[in-house]
Image 1 (cartoon, helix red, strand yellow):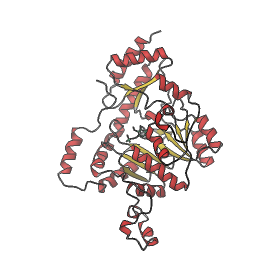
Image 2 (cartoon, protein in one colour):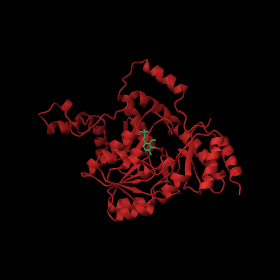
Image 3 (cartoon, rainbow, N blue to C red):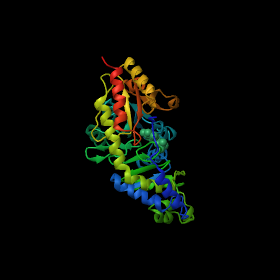
Length: 381
Ligand SMILES: Cc1ncc(COP(=O)(O)O)c(C=O)c1O
């Protein structure tokens, strides 16, 4: 069966992990976490990365650290189509949230709505999501955030290796987040990363990751000097949680990183085959420059075509799901929070008429060709 996702952790990874475990290594946040963080920073092209337990933990740490860098409660702008835990940290932290429509060709935020909100001073942070491996940035959005002093954060949990121009996304804002959950471009079982070029932000994230303890900070000596009455080993200088990962996850991350670029190329070949073979009435006009395909979107133009797409996918035994979670503005978890929703016609279209099927090393261009052939027969004019 063509499943939504398949584990990228194979038997050779598990064998190597078992051998390593027999050496009785340090298991929780030890040298391998630091090694994986450095390897990730090199691969992405940033100065600092902080490994945490999940993409969700990364989002929480990044949003809280960004609030502390700003020094006030920010208004946070997000896309209508993203994962719930892109928004949940802001809800829990009491940030007013503004939800923007998406652009049908990038599945990222609508440029016009975002820029008008930025110019009107309506948001302090733009937490953009690069959805299903498309580049959600535009030069106009980048110009606007820089010109009007809005803090850009990037949720790259589905976007390992996506580029804007020649530069990997996850390097454009104050900070970015990645998920290494099962089914993503690479996996550490569970896992996440916050990446940044800002040493102060990295420091805040390290404190938030580990209980707020001063000894986690690169400024531990200065913290200790400022509080001579408190044992420096148990000095809490920031609100913190336990969002740590383990060396076991980092061991897998280091191995997965070696094959990541090959996996991305294979995913992109599948996306190319899909978009070249789709019939009319199923959207094939995406901005694919710089993509690193996470999943294969099938967004129909109308109800009848959407029914045909669902029928073909089901008959071929292909597992499918809504595009991420559809229009989040329709989800009940937002009730009771301070949320402003701009008109979301494109997110609604995706919600009603879109689904996606899985992409990854378990999918071949032949499988994609078979799907597009059946879709073309079903939707023949
Ligand atoms: C866009 C986006 N953000 C955040 C997350 C959360 O990542 P995790 O499942 O590792 O918590 C996901 C999960 O798939 C995601 O797709």
